[in-house]
Length: 402
Image 1 (cartoon, one colour):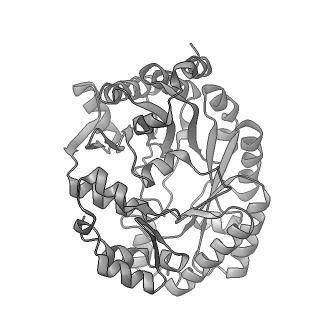
Image 2 (cartoon, rainbow, N blue to C red):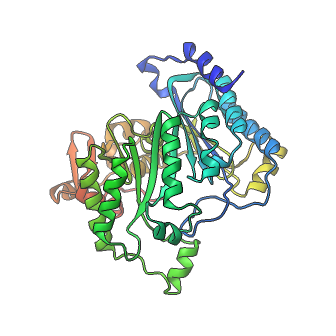
């Protein structure tokens, strides 16, 4: 059975009433390999001369079966192939994972299946096969529309190649998003405004817009420590951030999360599962999961993950029961990133903790008076002004600590 046939066959029994919303499950599939390591990247990505593709396909399917056995009654609402560079996966492997998922779980009739892709011409040539495998949404790592910025970021493609890949993606996939990185050292605000305006003009329904951050362990962190790279001043970067939100909102793609912007209804359903703290299973090297009141983490190094799957039938390195405090803390840390905010009553119910056990009500009132938060009964939202100070707000507002 092909992946498309599996999706079609799953539809009749996938329909679930609203009362079964709690059965919704998201699936994350990690492909850890890249052609090269970008100097800003701290993701679990690795460069290897060769990959044993049949072995990797079989290991992913075994890891998937393990998660399926532990999520009885779940209904799959999204699949996300992340990395690394998932567009380096053979389309047949992508299809095999989707087919297996359709066998293990009933699929939501409107299931979202996203794959992250690099915009090289070689990978763009696979887009039609990936769509035939069942992928219906692509997240394209353009990162910049400027050749000098792409060279600084260590990207293998240039702007023309990236835009050509975007054209192919828009012709092949029903839903398309792409990433841009801004607030680069020396970047002028007018140049970023022009780049963002041009990006919006391509007409995609979703944009992920990330400020450059210097992450520990990256090549950029080494250069910064040596004084060879000077990040943008935080106050100046804040001005870029505010202008970015203004421009996207005016264009009909408002921010729905700290770095993500979409036309209403085009938000990433998979990522919303994370931010709304709904259950998700994670397979592949380094993947995390939150399901059945447990947190799971797979072995990070590809070779260690493969060995674990061979040895025990899955790649889990650590599985721990979530305490009420864990549930409350993670719900707050994730949910306050969303423009829609959090429902304190829901967190209290799901964590079994009273609201005063995890929220400082005095601080909440103070932050609201300062215009950094709003509160409507039990729903709390960070305002645009507060979004610039989210880390400080969390420190003051949340009683629990990681």
